[in-house]
Image 1 (cartoon, rainbow, N blue to C red):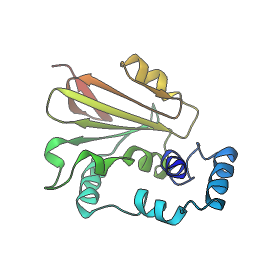
Image 2 (image 1 turned 180 degrees about the vertical axis):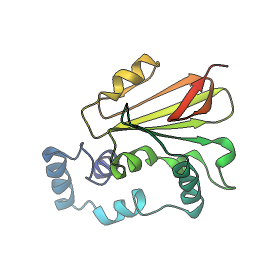
Image 3 (image 1 turned 45 degrees about the vertical axis):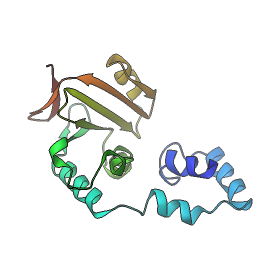
Length: 164
């Protein structure tokens, strides 16, 4: 379980949380019998086709604001293929943050119920928790989230949340 937490929180030891202590802890757990390959399969290589389709829809909506360095996208309730659910999108913001060459990533989820969930990631120096806290959320410098009332609307350089 401890190694699973390290694999999940560090995107398989690939994001900024993959510090020397994280590597040392992972090595110690593996020397005690924890199975890295099984966990890698469960957390990284185990995406159902419906989840990939959903990711594709979200990636097709990626927008970039060169003034802020923010890449953003949105997932709407109607995007979910039959049989797909929110659990299959766990780690999507991490994936974008570790894949895109941008300062900050924001993934918005508009479930059509009047609530928008946002998930920030950064590999740069930005403190995304400060922004999330202003929106009533929390997290830490590199990963943070929030939930606010409203709906997502498209803008020229990104996405915005309009009040009810």
